[in-house]
Image (cartoon, rainbow, N blue to C red; front, side, top):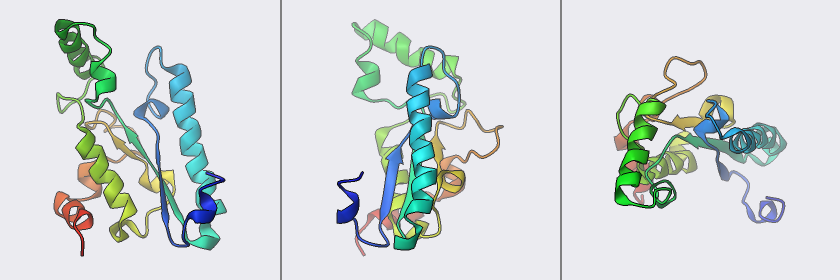
Length: 159
């Protein structure tokens, strides 16, 4: 961050990748959750530190996402299927599936776009992209409540 900051234009946007583990305790993930919580803390601090340069700082907190990192945890196809099923049922995720990396990317595109020009700091903009399994907890927002897909598509397409 220290090396990149001089290269960032005033009025820019920084988007940090945290995790749902920074908000919701997950067994055997205490250190991981603590490091991701530190990222959210950096975002809060940097929001204030960079306000004079009008640089917005946001964090996204994805939940379980179907990536090679998760599917690679199983050694056989059967183990991979059991693992993916356990992520969905153990947590539980009301949508009944893991997130897709493209869904996370769309939230990041929104935060990088001018459509989110008044969003900065994790209290307003940490987007727990988790299939809404924290929908009863305060200060969490599912992507579907934050921005409509057509706005994301507009933000992603060149003007």
